[in-house]
Length: 106
Image 1 (cartoon, rainbow, N blue to C red):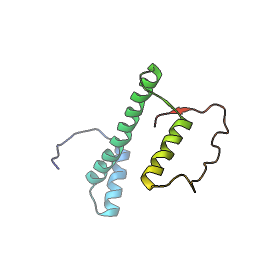
Image 2 (image 1 turned 90 degrees about the horizontal axis):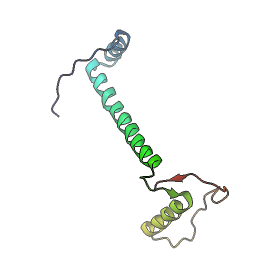
Image 3 (image 1 turned 60 degrees about the vertical axis):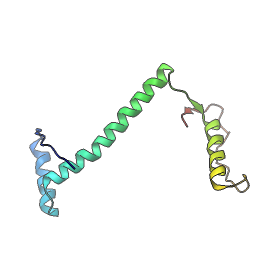
Image 4 (image 1 turned 90 degrees about the vertical axis):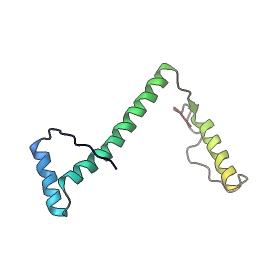
């Protein structure tokens, strides 16, 4: 993996924590900072992807699916993939007992 140098300002208390962790484990503080950045970028990417979808939903640009429709599609897909004919499937508790369900994407 190609790397680049990035200079950032980190509060001394946080940097001290990384130094202490490095001393306890024999790894470098740089290792732990890199690990934290790699993990957190995934959280940020997921957050902003969800925010974009939510924005499209609010504008009416994103199709929604009723839960019952999604559930039926999912059950049919599982049956196709497992070769089951529907016998012996487990009925989900609470299925159909609410009048209004939130809409979700499949």
